Length: 61
Image 1 (tube, rainbow, N blue to C red):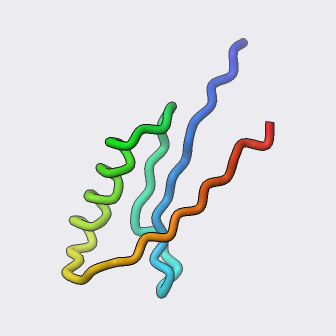
Image 2 (cartoon, rainbow, N blue to C red; image 1 turned 120 degrees about the horizontal axis):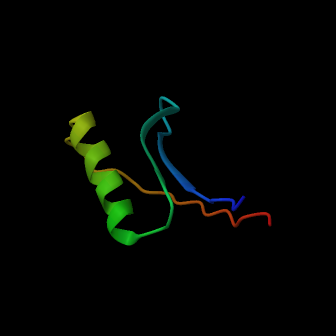
């Protein structure tokens, strides 16, 4: 049986330490990442500027 790999992405609010957005996809894509951030921003009804800190971890394979 063939194995499938998925990419899991999450957005954390550093102050509250809560997950405010997430997405699981079969591939990485800039437009999917932008959509994830736009959706999280819209659903949280944010009115202020935010700072993005990104951390990328390579697969341990």
